[in-house]
Length: 144
Image (cartoon, rainbow, N blue to C red; front, side, top):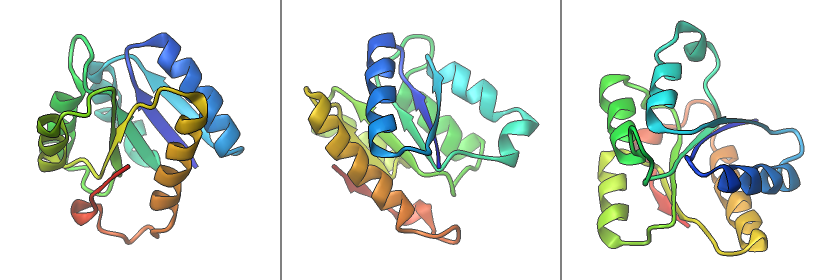
């Protein structure tokens, strides 16, 4: 399994890496520090050969925020089959609604403890793993 995390906070990326290692032993994690970097990466021909099993986008980032990156990925890049989770400290209904309207499949509010993070990651990864490669992620929506 492979996961891409887009988050500008280095501490959050480090904690996430520790949590994902605990939850999914054979999971590869690739980090990006802002939305522009993931968009630039996804535009390379090499990236289309092996997309991640799950992409997590933080909402509040400099340069290009997660919602803008999500909109580009879903409309311009036509990556409908890529499961995308918003991963943010925001629990505002407006942010959740906007993310889901723009095409996010999951919305995860960043937890305050490491243990809660591992629980949420187990739920998110199991939701993605349950579906085979033919699953239509354009209609899959979940908040955890």
